[in-house]
Image 1 (cartoon, one colour):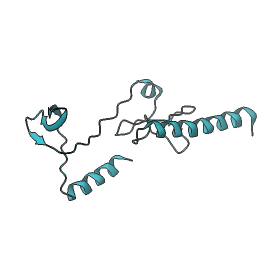
Image 2 (cartoon, rainbow, N blue to C red):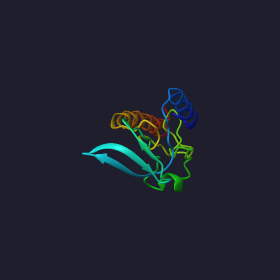
Image 3 (cartoon, rainbow, N blue to C red):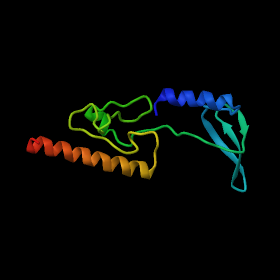
Image 4 (cartoon, one colour):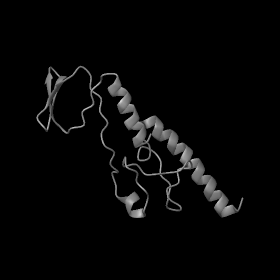
Length: 128
């Protein structure tokens, strides 16, 4: 999902009367482990009954950038449908390339990428 899709979803959520706060969180107030209020760095306070958030994506290594891989506005490595980056011979897969970050998604993407990499290596080395 790209940034425009997230913005569209945010607009739809707001139409339902659900507020979206994009300020930085200072701290949480809780009662017996149940979050009751969020205190923002701008000193605003919001009580709540449910809490959803999307942490920013950060690559945990500088290797993709050092190799010259394109990184999109969401912090993800850009790949094509075959897990190829813009750098010849460099593939990427898993939660550094997709917004749906889960173990199942990562395993599936890794399995798919591995098959595509092996296929490319076989074709390259055995002229098939």
